[in-house]
Image (cartoon, rainbow over all chains, first blue to last red; front, side, top):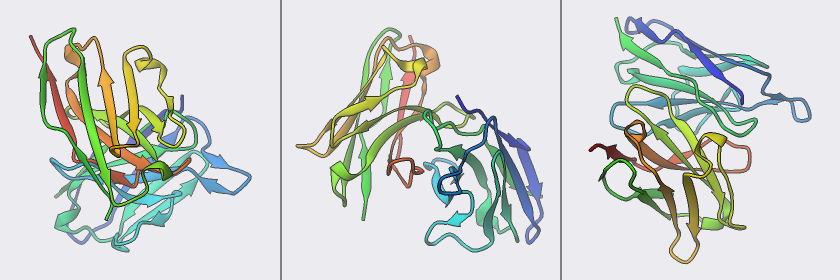
Length: 113
Length: 118
């Protein structure tokens, strides 16, 4: 199985500042035939299901604010929120969908400093 | 609008079986895989398996094989998750979610809380 490890486990950032969350996969999730990384980022607010923010490591879903961006390739990935807003307080998860089982990271809790 | 509506909260005793449903609307049922995942308090989601409604094929992770059954009822556009031999560690919120083939989960149900307690 591919293990997904996020860092840090929690993060406190001031409003308007940048937040950076990292995700590492135990093996490459880059499919060479199409040069795509099979990596998604989700946001989960309390009492809600996860919401897909980014797929293919860097493609924002429709309606997701452009302050959210994803980067990385192979085994190392980053979710960046360029200017933190109050509504961004949530837990963020990465997930690989390269190979079953589609494992998630343990989550990063983002709070306001 | 694509919607996944799950059945309500369940309370079960250890050793029992729970069955959760996920009724879908707003898309062609056969066109997407239906996944089930669960989330224990304070933990990340844990994938429990998928069904391909078009062909009825299922895939389960080794951890749950023999205990989990996922069924897609094409006549009612409803997916079902059955988990047997429940234990306290199965207490979690259970979610259904949709994806294409080798794609992320772009739509989720609202979640069903299952509590296992004697």
